[in-house]
Length: 308
Image 1: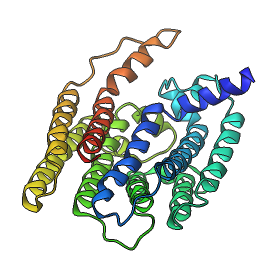
Image 2: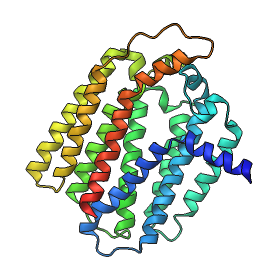
Image 3: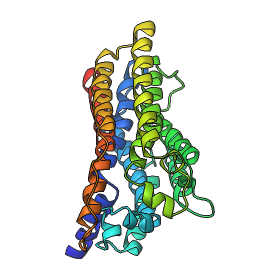
Image 4: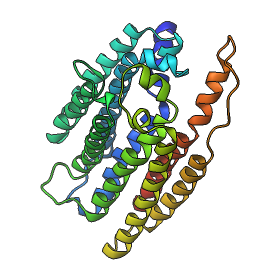
């Protein structure tokens, strides 16, 4: 039992608790922003079951990704369990398979579209990391998967909240989802690339960071963040959607991303036998990604607090 619990904990760590958390927040935001147009609300346990199905599908996707990323993760000095040898890839794959099946089973009794939403997310996860041509190998493939998976998260929350009723998506949800997805694609992708350029290049990937280099990736990230904030603030005013608080939260996030993006990492000493210098360099280069991820949590929590 202790060994099973240890594997379970390591699998959650491998899938990144912050990623699982923001995935849950995306689904719940889809629920919260759907409530004004919902004809009838399901029991809270139904919403929780939908959220569980979504998060388990994300867990399965990220475990599969961790297994397929082990070579480049070790080059990049990643501290995740599979890369450091604490989690057997075979165990991770087994847990991923179980999580995927449970996610699909959890949709029984939910509105019909939820089965296809969960199945679609699992397919996207395989296409992103699996053979024959993993989409993670290019910036375009990565952005495409992020876009579609993000759309499915908000759509899943909307479908469960409305009970699958034939109602239109509310403008607030459409605007929020569009900006949040663009934040992942145009800010999150270059931010993540900053710490992974060496390993991605060694694995033959053609990510944005590999293709244009670190300095230009930082520029793309900062310009995109300001552009999204400007668009979102104008849209909130022009369309009079109740997302003023979210726009203020996004402004805080843009400031954080800009600050970390302008602070390029200092030169790192020659790596010692323990690899400490490589770990330190990766930590420095992940500051922008941390600001990006923190912003995701902040804007989603703000949306939830303002609409529940």
